[in-house]
Length: 564
Image (cartoon, rainbow, N blue to C red):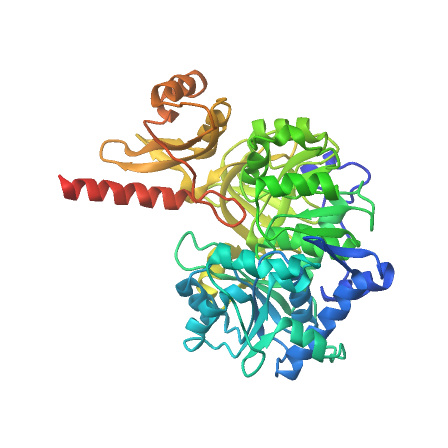
């Protein structure tokens, strides 16, 4: 790769270009089993599995998939939280020649039906409590086989006996599924099947490993086609970036869901390829995470800003020792400087902001963990990753410091959108991925995101970036979470509105926040409207759903006008 402005910042330990392994992703699980054997690969609610056990069970699943007729290229939906079955079925499906379709367990029947039909998935691996939902849509989709996994499957005694009672209390349902016909029970498969699957020839650069659906904040979700090579290269870039970590010795906290590409790459695939132990947590609960950090002593903790905010604001934070944490890369949303500084103070570790998107497997930029970093910047492009800022009018490369659309290019960039050439052509041009994010690059090659192109607020002719306003509001001692959005306004076109969640014990009001903002922002950027809420709507990885807030505001206004 030709020399770029940002390469001057690279420490000698990080190469600007890497010789990537051109191997299918699942081969790395076999390699880890050979190298690490009985070393623990997974920890789940008291149960541990070695690399050999994970590899053997993945081979059993691959064999079973093939016995049911899975052919190379068939799609396998995985609708699971972080649990052993999520890892084992993922690698098992790839071994059998399948393409994984990661599916959010929170999907409604409508969302699930859309994804199964769009992907053409014929197999699904889901939790027992989700079986009724899956069966309700099965007749209207290509689905042929349902694999049923339970949280209790891997729980140690006596937790495995107690869990069904907890499940009944939590979900008000008792789950009983029989093994037979189109329904296949996980524990029965492991008891009755051998690991003798038939290896499938895979071209890592051409063959897909994954269909990862985008969030669908605009229109229907699109299936991002990621090859084995896309995913392998992004993990190996990540490994190079975290050069101080020791292979086979780190413990990685798996709070980010694996059905999201960020958790899948930086926790699951990274841990398998580097022989690290993964701590699997099925959902984010601040208290549980704090207890787990103290007990299991993870050293790496990939996360999202809302996860770190949740921990920092837990009333019992000071009771826990978080000093095992050495490095965290935050993604999925902008990392407020206040959160970064507080978290580093509490843990003694390093927390830096990174950037990426589903279409790039996902990471493209990050700050250095142990060298120069710039707060508020997403850092610089990773090895073999090119990036530029495009002028919105001319689509030519913008001048240094000028705001435009961020474009990226590299081995981690997707092949395109599944069965959607029109949308592919909009964002992929000559190998460049147009991200839809607005940003700029400084004279040292550090990149900054000012906001999503579609989230930019135009009020009275001024361009206002929500992130800038949010950063200021996060500095207020009483603000726990905030999202800023443009609300239709008959006079200004749009007006700035802040949706705010207060910290416990703070009585926030509009006047207080308004005075605070006027000290730090130009008058036209100061929110004209405030709405105080108990919580903000978020995706599974904690990204705040700004569009949902705007829609609810519009709906509220319509209801009020109907009343009057």
